[in-house]
Length: 505
Image (cartoon, rainbow, N blue to C red; front, side):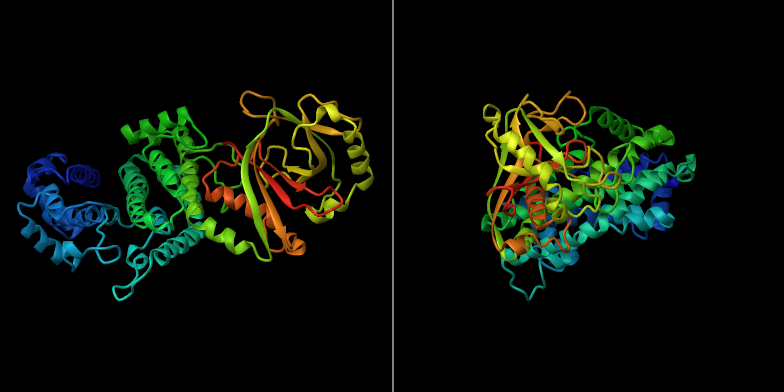
């Protein structure tokens, strides 16, 4: 008898029936053992009785339910199989140290099913240690101390701080999981039950639980106006992907959804390295921008985890980034089919400000020619410095800049110039046909501060425009059709004061 697998099945059954009347015979039947033998093993391995475990889980969930709008104590008591409100209140007070009528965020105990799953699997070397490195929300800190009277804005700021810290840790843990899934030595027959608990309970169930708590807490704060509404859609997409549905986000993938569903139904297929390669994908690095051959299930989870955090902390970061200048306007635009015509900046340094000063003769000759093509104006007729990486990751292809202008589709291309076509929907088009959907941000204020690129990823205007997009949960089509552009609203001889950033709406 594989007791790890048997206990795992029993725990899964308990979790699915916490609001039902369940007895020891039903639970032990999942392990094909007698009830007395099963209870003995359960207590030896976990240090608690089955009854204690069920009670702790029910009371932990009851606290979360009580914080939902219009929740009634008697309804929650009945839901978790207490005969009277009085008996429920006594049990609740003993467990949480506070009566159900006074429960609030930060003053209740959270008894996570993962804790017992991991204890059962204790000593799984890298796997156990790595999943504990995820920076999860510490709810005992979010609500503040009992003596503190935090405003909703102060409570939300604690979530912003958590999200910012999680961005520094979680990406590397997801990459470590990718390495673990691809390590053949970890996936022998004898490790499958352990690995199922690590992946299904230690990762997927853990994030599902956190998402549920985040959603409830954010809904509580929402009436005060401090919450960025985009976070709710980010949580919905993350929950879909945790459940194996990869069709609602920015990279719908029917084939991978089907593979994940098969893994959920029969985890033993993870013995097949081909299946594990689809689940693991390739590492994308601490910023999620490294080039990959296979974008696997773990990369979906990594991206959705990041999106939740971006929606929380990016709006605050954008405010702080506007030092000496400000965003005047921000909008998303979809243009008809158009053609960019330009000349490449010959600069190998990668420094954008240096690049803008290069190739003046070729630049001026091109603009003089484009000025005479009156019949081919696109309606977005500013001089721009168009930039991309030829559809590749920034880790394998350097920045390329092109002085030019967006013209009508089919505009004639002058000798010595290059061009790229743009269409509103970039589906089934030739390589490097870009999408004519973009974010446009305009700026005003101290020009020197606006163009001080020290400590930025791609310049002040680049960082702020990108961060607004990320905070709103809009898809940046990196790397395949990713592009940006400095916009010279007052002409190419004056500093740029606007920025374009590729999106898919």
